[in-house]
Image (cartoon, rainbow, N blue to C red; front, side, top):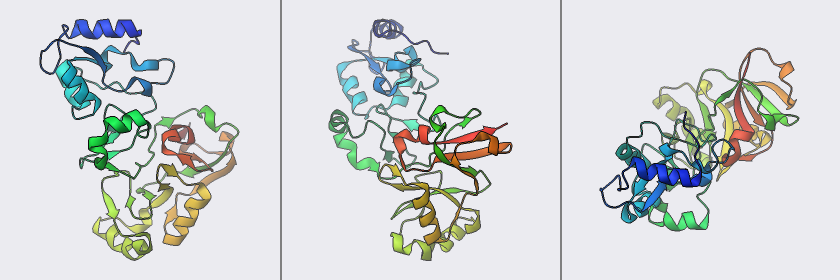
Length: 279
């Protein structure tokens, strides 16, 4: 388990481990660089991201390349001999991230992270803004065996988790859990006409699709709006196990997808939607 250091301890420890030289070229080290941006580490036990395994000694040139993401986090970790990425607790560990918490997709494109719209981040990422897609990943979150506190006394819909792909829809795009694998790219009015054909080509029965989220910009729409989209497309939503003010007592044992009834931002999805195991 990584130890959270003070700012001064972090700087001293990173320089000492790297022998005061840039891990990329061997030049004199100028900066104890945060591999993942320190402002993304928000929980008390990780605040500031001052972990030795999240630091690297870089020269001025490679520090600039790391900041604008032309030098990847993976390359820096490899140069430092760091075997496992240190990530903020609220970022799902099954994605690959750049310095600013943007998700890197397998097709070379990126998904906007929570710091993306900040003016300094926009400035440093300017050469690569064309690499970003407007879509969001499916909010496939970790399993909680205890109910997360943000759901207490909130209006929720609790959905039964069953086999089959779960879909995120947009007005011009449709994907399942792999955001960079489109199921179709027609405009909204053509989705229904092409749906069955595309599902057939993907080897998936349309009856095995269950809608839980509809995306728009960086927002997931409310449950009522989600049901309206599903009805238009004649796609199933996940079966509802419970809808109302949260009550674990009303559920049998099993795995559920719980989301708040209201719409929510992707950046707050860990507080608004989660997989919950009732044991």
